[in-house]
Length: 321
Ligand code: GA4
Image: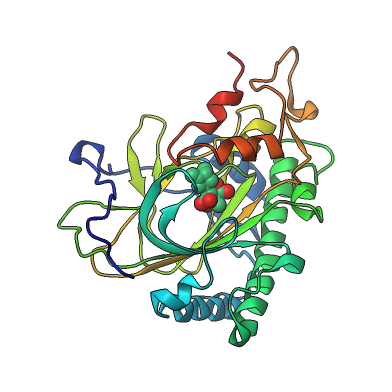
């Protein structure tokens, strides 16, 4: 990764630094029958949790990771042939269309296998195959979690959330992020990926054993999420917050760069079809409860998101006063 003059990468002030968090990150064993209530609680409290016994084959994860490492070790000029990422492809430092930058390079891909871009050249059939297999496996897990959540919330039918990801028109995204070691760290946290919430329904993250992910607590403190390459981290997105009328929390998160080691993460962002109305599910509303949000479609929300900066409060525009 080539360093341009002086990167305009935000440094975090000491006051904003990480705090110790005694509660820790909820750990949920998906094979346990009592995990539904735990899943609901985790989505209400932090909006993020870790899952084990997730059913995604370890070999598949390992092989995809090694293909991704191989891709990012190519020269910048070769990688740039797979860019720019508008909407899909390779990106370096620039995130989104509105001036955000981070200490990160990445691949942004559609999850629609029919439209998989031919950006990797001829030798990349293996990478493409692994990406597609991996996406199928994490999507299956995400749908199981969404069905357990629906059951935990006593929502009928139990596929009320998951059917949106299963839909052929589901507008989901897959992202592979590489955070190279950042030589300028000097005891300070440099931003790998700036703070934001995810616009979609649910995000499924897996990383190598290098930490960097932090989440924001309700009181504004940031806590580090210790990495675990054998588990997945699941977070609530803005759309799920709306569909649960604010009961589930779309968690604000960021990634800080590491001074000496590379972090590699892969995230599946499960989203609805573009035409889908995003609104609180009727079966969740109690008594006279009113929607906290104006009506909008996923297309409208996405259009508005792409006009925003990473750290903006995107849902704010859709809240009823
Ligand atoms: C955040 C979640 C996903 O990584 C992403 C990001 C997208 C991008 O990188 O192009 C966005 C960001 C994300 C939200 C606001 C807009 C769009 C960058 C940005 C400034 C792929 C997504 O869907 O929304």
